[in-house]
Image (cartoon, rainbow, N blue to C red; front, side, top):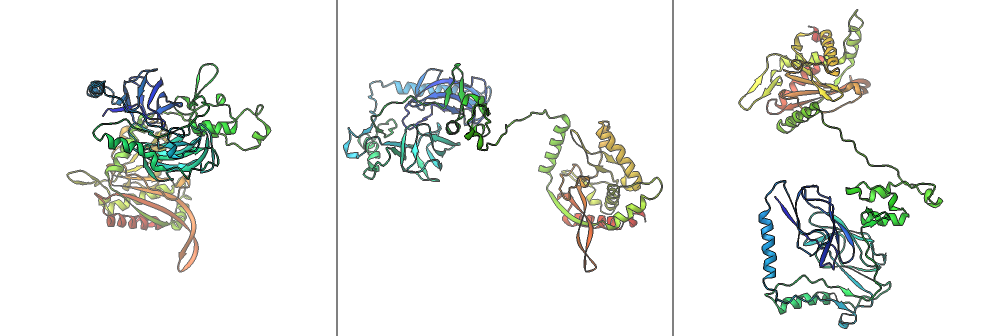
Length: 542
């Protein structure tokens, strides 16, 4: 749905703004956090960022034009969305305002030491109100104060971080002086235009300032004309001081280009003596942000010795965009569907591998015979499935399908992802036959020569990461299977045998089950049978 973005109030005294530059054009995609435009306020030229995602559908204020706060700035919505109703509404609102041109404008109310001696404001004191930092902001929360009472404040310094209805933003000072009072503490929430802080000359006594006086004009206006709408009145202290040129959050360079820099980054650069023209920004439109200043490495030939002696962490944030292969897309789709449709639960078990190690060693001493622990695991799983057919199932909305055959899928890691070649009728194969078939299929998988029929029809899956030293992990069920077994590495650890502590060889397995087809007791019984086969391999030959 399209959203109307109005001219924001970017300073506590701003009544209107000038669009200095648009950084997005009609039809451009806009992401939350993108800089939409540079807006010149009464005090500075500031970057205005988007709080919405979508497409820029309409620009209401062109570059160089001036408009009051809350006038239609632009509209963001879905590409091709009809916004005629929003534009008609804005036009009607404008016409309504123009239908009574004789109505006098409400006078702006301000305070100064000369005009209102009752307030008791000492000379040079500035009242800072809670700013309107987004077009929909009604109140703000002070997330953090970056200055404390008594600190010196320069124009452009970050006073506080303020949480609006859409983001947490840095609020910079438009005045120089000393922070004399904090009106809203960290964590507190207050309405827009509430007293945020007081800035003035160091040592100024503000105890005589009546905070109620600041709200009096607005209250009087409401009492005098209860039926008439008034413009928003922002109380401020008018002081006579030498005007300083506005400080922009986007600085200029000599060749006419612009440097986009956040206020905090600009302040850090000044403190560190960093020339912003030498910094490459990583933000939107090469905007220089805090991390760019922190990671900036100056040319040591031009940097004073004192600056070189302090350690600066070095690094550049870089990304590489790699298009997803069709295999990766398929893996993502199938595993996502499995994880979020099948109610997974997990059963873990430690296996005593001492007998398995001894049996494998003896078997591999036979001529032209070589088996792996993985071959033994596949064989044991196939035989256990024979006794627990409810694990060898798949779920459909109408029924549970129990497979009478046993086809074991073996997960194989390849460069682009993961393939699962299938061992058909694995329960009828010997360990040596299993080993030969697994090596053949794994080789084809890595060479990208597997045929589609060699990856179809599995009824149960095994994923083994033990060869990588992984001791325990859980897998996502390879649907339409109802279960997958995760196999870890064999590790030596203390175990209790015949009441004595000894060093044992232990392997951890984890069975992930689909609770729609495999109950907890069924999965546990399957693992107990599997355990009996692995811990006593000789029974697999009976």
